[in-house]
Length: 385
Image 1 (cartoon, one colour):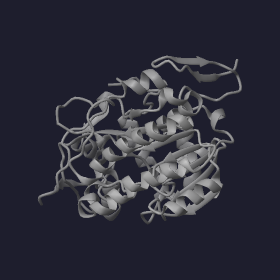
Image 2 (cartoon, helix red, strand yellow):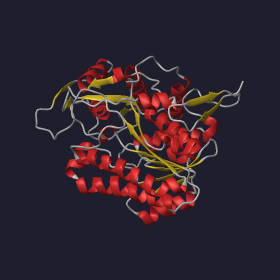
Image 3 (tube, rainbow, N blue to C red):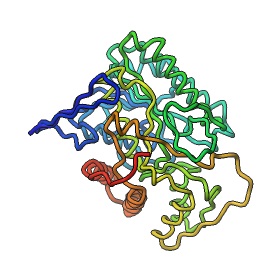
């Protein structure tokens, strides 16, 4: 028997047919990606590095465009991400000439835009840079797409923080108002609006399908960014220091990095094969039960890590949302996508990756092994809301 995946142009209707030599695993169609020319921005970052490895493993021709890795150490270097790239361009998305030139050279069929200034607290101190990178960088990206023949699908990655957070305690659906208290969040809301404007003004007539993807708080091996809970915990653990937590009762939609990446891949395939049927905004978050507090996360990390300690930060901190949760029912029903790893598993896999790195293991092989494990795992039972 064979497996084949296709999509109707009718909203909310999905077609799955099976043929023997396709590898789908009900999540990512490996055969679809083989030989596809992909232009990936942000490939030197945490999420971008994982996505570049996954695409390479499926046989895609990946052309990366990004700044140098943002931290030391970093996944790009540790995981030898650059070895399998068709092109590795170190460039700034604020430089439209360089960006357009690299894209034309790559001649991509699919564009995945992940390059960004991704930190809330950094955006308070550097708002101009945040808007320049996130907003004008995306404008440059979409303009480069307009100048590049052959592009059929574009996924622009934003964030779960693009919604106007009214602290209602309810999960956010894709049709709810956009907004943002801090520069980072509001810059991503701007990206959502401008992507919609370019879609309607330029790309509908050019038959280029453009969608945005809003993911939850990602965790996983290879993230050394500052002001992120799990990397901060692991740094403190490695140094034998006490972790200081800003907002222990804040609730976030935590998920392993491979969860939203699988959603981006599924969405890109839908855009490529179904066109405008999927050209809109999409949430990719965890199961409803896995929107947990910072305290819940830290207590489980401490329990799994002998010698770890934490305490509350006493100094006043900039505003951050207290409660944030995503409704992912649209992606579940229309894309056939669903989370596969529950939060406990995501934490376990993150600690396993970090331990392997500390032991000096081959982290490219280890990372590809985790991708294979993720793809072949039967989705753990959970609510999509």
